[in-house]
Amino acid sequence: MGKLKFLLARIAGLNWKQMLRKIDEVHEKSGRSKLFIFFDMVWCGLRYQAGYMDYWLFEMYKLNSAQRKTILTRGMNNSFIKTYNDPAYMPEIENKLRFAHNFADFLHRDWLDYAAASDAELAAFVEKHPVFMVKPVDGQCGRGIEKLDVRTLEGGLREHLDGAGHVLLEECVTQHRDLMALHPCSVNTCRVISFTHGKKTRVVAAYLRIGNGKYVDNFNNGGMVVPIEEDRGEIIYPALDKSGHLYDVHPLTGVAIKGFKIPLWDEVIAMVERAGQVVPQVGVVGWDVCVTDNGPLLIEGNDYPGHDIYQLPPHRTNGIGVLPKFQKAIAECLSD
View 1 (cartoon, rainbow, N blue to C red):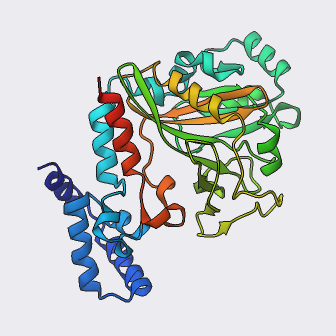
View 2 (view 1 turned 180 degrees about the vertical axis):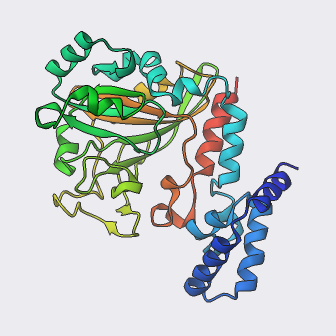
């Protein structure tokens, strides 16, 4: 019934023009008839809760049934969120101001709620941190984030910030020297997915986001991504950008990406497992982690982490997706 409800909901909100475009693209790549592709998409929707974007993005037309069963599709991801993330507690993760209060022990940097700050508090913060990050409290996907240097700001600081909405001011963090060598223009963060139930938290999957000439590392803003082997913190694949380019080495620094090891990885895992226990009512969380020379710290948490970035086709061995990792973590946490 759950799969049928998902399929009906997807059909009701279907963008038929975009679906037809994706069918055309798959037809060009695979050589299969458009009619076959259409019915195969429908089958994948029924059997695996995969929308047409999943079918296209994960190249499900290349996979056999055993491989398809390992893909974490949008429908399955939604089901995990609905089952294990209590909506009443999700703002404790999603809202950056609440997150800063809840996870103060994991931030290891100064921050200021601009809306509540007095002139004296703002002046003290800026004097200590003339360069800082401005983040919308309710922002997502890196939108609206600004790196501000008051020494080069034209006009008054209040005038500039008053037009930014409800924002959080944060001290800039300095990443570990190894990650700095990889790409110094941005903080290259680790996205670590965890599952929590009761007193147990398990790391499910992880990937590294790497900047490429900009001060942000987001995949949708010019950056690249690559999975991290969560058991040892090693990268075994080339990084991928949104244009489909693969990189064994970083194009700007020449540092090897394939074979790169995340520093202090055991500390990253330990920190995420502790963080998962702060708001255990939100079971599935994507943690953005910065590793510094002094250890890892949390940048933010995501109570609705995506399902696509850590199982893209170039990053799957034998076509195997990330679903078995979720199933294993859930089984371990639900066991007595």
